[in-house]
Image 1 (cartoon, rainbow, N blue to C red):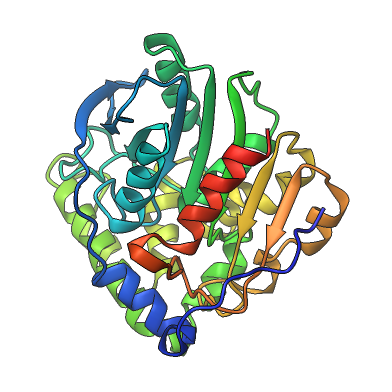
Image 2: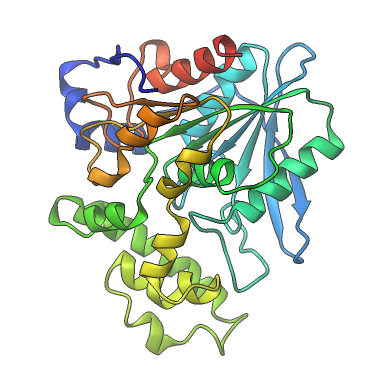
Length: 320
């Protein structure tokens, strides 16, 4: 079902998609949250770092939070989410995807938009080592797509998983890539590319036969990066094969637990196929909210609590 019309209406200046994206990406500060890091060893010999923060009272509820492209668990959109969950009786496990915790991961491969095998291991680890009866998933951008893919691609979802929220989710990766390659997003694309190539350079001494200067010199765009590295490192034929196989759009009809997607209409990163109106209309478990404003992960809120932070909390607390 599609959700009711959104109630989100930010101040005038933050109705600009670009201003809201930039402000909440670069200038927002979140204080007063204490995280404790756990290094989780993966079955393939790599590792993922999990940053835990706790409710002030014992709880059986946990929110697992996933960041976006080149993010980490210290980004304000992650710490703001974790802080609000902690204040309302949830523990929070904020995930640093492979290579995103400030230390290069061990393998040639890294993280990507469809690496649900890592999310499966994280959930299994949490359920085996902790005692939570209610687990909720929240993901931003790349992390949102990853969660949606996980829920709909046919995995055995543990009964403790009760619901999910995806914010600014690029449900069609090719549609999103097309937007990121357009002139309106040139500054964002350059910033992403700079960070991604920097990480590739860090890996190069460890994998000199796989990461060549001649290949790096071919990377002019984000799609080139996915052709040169993402596809090769993760078993895809090329970037378009990666986008096709890892887009969550095709898996949305199979989601069978309460799931909310919030994608702003003025999100410059999202193309038309990233707004799954038909899929939401045909799946009673899937709720789609499309505010007029919000940019990309740029939702404002009073008292430094964003609209999507409160919306996710309310969704988890009232839907089950």
